[in-house]
Image (cartoon, rainbow, N blue to C red; front, side):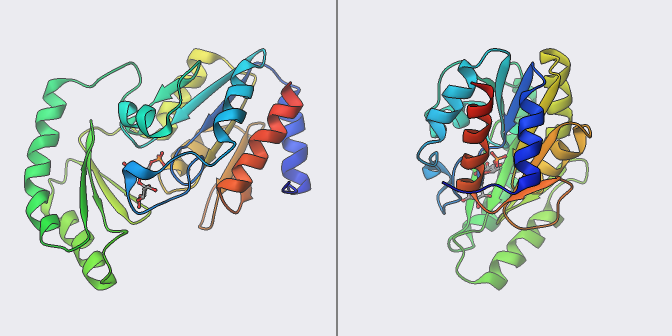
Amino acid sequence: MIDLPADLDAALADLARRRPVLVASDYDGVLAPLVGDPSAAVLLPGMADVLARLARCDGVTVALVSGRGMADLQTVSGLSGDYRWVGSHGAEFDGPLSDELAGRRDALADVLAPVVEGTPGALLEIKPASVAVHVRKVADRALASALLDQARTLVDSSLTLKPGKEVLEVAVTDADKGTALRRLIAEVAPASTIYLGDDVTDEDGFRALGPSDVTVKVGDGETDARHRVPDPAGALAVLERLADLLA
Ligand SMILES: O=P(O)(O)OC[C@H]1O[C@H](O[C@H]2O[C@H](CO)[C@@H](O)[C@H](O)[C@H]2O)[C@H](O)[C@@H](O)[C@@H]1O
């Protein structure tokens, strides 16, 4: 059992006293450890159980807020049940995106595919509202960096660039996790909210929350979150503590 910092433990206890509670979390790097193959990023053992426990608590809504497409998120996580699903950094809130956006995304993929194919180990991920250039498995780090630079110069400046961990995503919408969380909060009307995230795109989510909410950065890096745990095992400890407090 991981001991949480005292200030984080106190913040969780305070949060649990104020229902309704919105428990929102990013997926990759928080609920699922980062791996080389995006389609192999499965939940940390224990995560499915704790998310189900939280979702069963009175006055608790659990939301999964991911950069992944919603259908991909549901498949890779293996989760089903009473969760709110937000995919594509918030662009997929109520269901699939329009065909017009898919056409723009396909045109973008056509531009990026040749340079990605020319870089050994690189991967082009086609998502509902974006295309992601992955370089985690590019052994030559100079080549990885050059590919990301080249991708930036190739794409239309009206598109939204979302740099992340060993990835550059180019999106055909300007959705972000901050807007997505504000929309969730407007719908769920929680008295308190917690958000856990690990990457640059989660900073919009942290900044969207108020001073009495709880924000938890998972891993290293600059952050506007008020609390930090080192890894997904730390995120699991946070969620388990919260589930105990809310049960
Ligand atoms: O918002 P998230 O749920 O954290 O999704 C962000 C991106 O996650 C995935 O990429 C990241 O995880 C991969 C699997 O561990 C890893 O190989 C990659 O380097 C990471 O950047 C996913 O593939 C992207 O579509 C998401 O946008």
